[in-house]
Length: 235
Image (cartoon, rainbow, N blue to C red; front, side, top):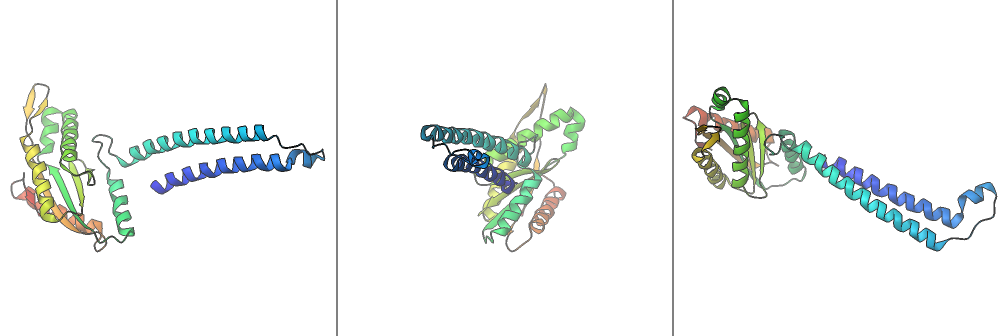
């Protein structure tokens, strides 16, 4: 995605450079008069400089607007519309980027899932379920570092990637999120309720292992957490 956006900006730069080049070639060689066999006119320096200046201003405005628009498009393409977290597609692109850099850096993965989320939808409706998902995403974002990644993996399942963090430190992060969610009072209209979350952890260098294998490992730990009582972190 990023490479496509960079190519668009690069083409715009080339376009304006080409426009400026054509302008000055025409001023220097007076191409229309030359082709028609007329006498070459002298260069109008003030007019040519003014035209070049206007092209530069136009290029600056258009490229700035394009960058802002492409940034919005990129943001829409990489984020889950409900929670505002990164989406599954972006997470996979991130995996591929890390592998392409041959980074030996250690990564911890946290795969987490809301417990008995279906009951929320059944008892209070899907709008309430959306509210719980958005609030959970907000809690997760507030409990991770600026350089960490949090995404909605699917349904009520979330994936957190912690670059450079060992598994024991990742356990502390997951435990903080678990306690925050478990202690939070969810309010929907006149109804108040609580919900818990289960966590599965794994960790490795993405250069040594396929991301799907690491996530599968985290998923197995999450399955253990679910089967051993829920509302816990397993690694």
